[in-house]
Length: 245
Image (cartoon, rainbow, N blue to C red; front, side, top):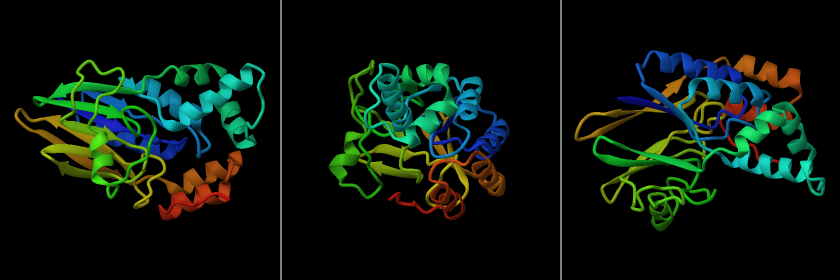
């Protein structure tokens, strides 16, 4: 059994298409998306549709969570403090898809290679952001159970996304995996995803990098006049975080 794990597409259609083509060559049985299909890039609607068509499971990311919160307020008549940036992405996504992403689960888990694997966007309970050099006690939190967990015990393998930088660490005989970003990598300008394979007694975890047409992604962003256009293009081309404001 092989499972492909993707996340943080962020409306980058060329990157998503390239990763899906690469996944086809891997002989995977399932695809799971760990959220943030939307935001930053120009094609959130298309990214949602591709994930719905190709993924067996999708969990919610902080962008879906935040946009849906604003969407619920907006449709309820409360327009206070909703930025034009958020409104732009909500218009591009559309009402039906906003309702869909707002209903996504926070986490998922399964037994694989005799291990309990738990997957979520940033943290099993919230959207706290932890990095490979965060304090050990914070990284150990990522093995904890989620509210929806059937097994209320620490995971053997914890898999998350959010920080757009892939890595694998072994902590107290448990493995912590970040799958990086399909559409907005912040280490090198190549799309990132992970393939997990059940090898019997061991679970094989492979970080995969994929080249994609960055020029086309930039062109789409210009055509759509994506919010924070300069910063977004800088991130695509340099894989360095652009701080807004």
